[in-house]
Length: 99
Image 1: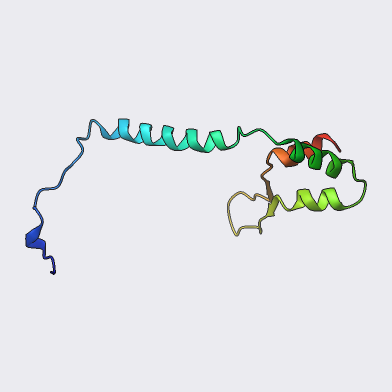
Image 2: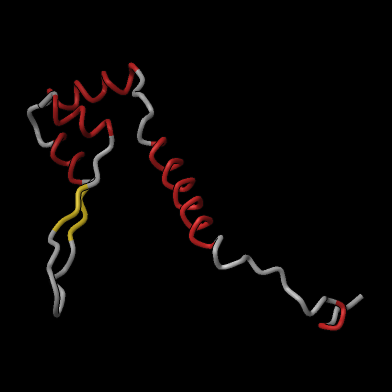
């Protein structure tokens, strides 16, 4: 059975404009807290041990590991230039502490 536009009501449910800022703030708060809780996870004993031994090595293993968390960007034609962005997780922080 094919549906046509006559099968659906012409009126749509519209959120009053006074509720829109509240809904936007609520949605932003819910999304932000779920992302923030992901960074609050504790490291396991194995991860701490791995970070310790990776930080204690005195060869190029640690710099190569940390380099994987860096992104380099080309020079833009105009505007500000961001050379590198580093995003470290808890394992990277442990490696840097134990270096």
